[in-house]
Image 1 (cartoon, rainbow, N blue to C red):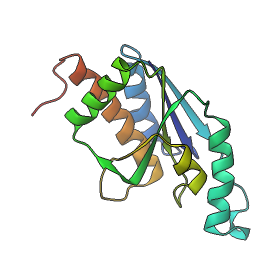
Image 2 (cartoon, rainbow, N blue to C red):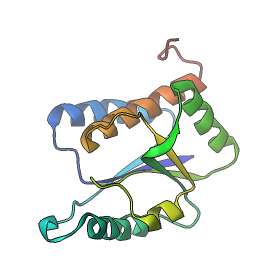
Image 3 (cartoon, rainbow, N blue to C red):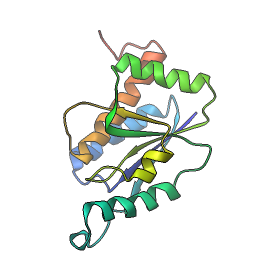
Amino acid sequence: MKITFLTVGKTEDAYLKEGIEKYVKRLKHYTRLEIIDLAELKNTKALTAEQQKVKEAEMILKKISVTDFVILLDEKGAELSSKQFAAYLDKKNISAAASLVFIVGGPYGFDESVYQRANDKLSLSRMTFSHQMVRLFFIEQLYRAFTIIKGEPYHHE
């Protein structure tokens, strides 16, 4: 199973980049992971929030194929424990979902066109985190899920 992590904008803080890279290296033992950072929009002061979401949606939808199983990381999504997320991934792997695409949108969330294309929505927390931090949190949870699936001692109850 291939996993793509698609984000709007890039990680700028060195400590977050280091953390993400740490887990990306570890994930190579479990899955094929591709991280795609879409460029942030320029001159956004002249755009409304809705206009920004539409432009971001155009960029996002260009990176998704019709066969991808698309999961939005969204505040309106289902909240799962780490074990539930591991079971979710395992089920997708067993059901022969060849490619999972997890998406983090821009600062205003997703345009309706992206919601319509999505197959599922997951929330990392009811709290709000910066888009940069969400990247590290998600990559760590992805690693944790694979260690749970493999029965390895990373996760503790």
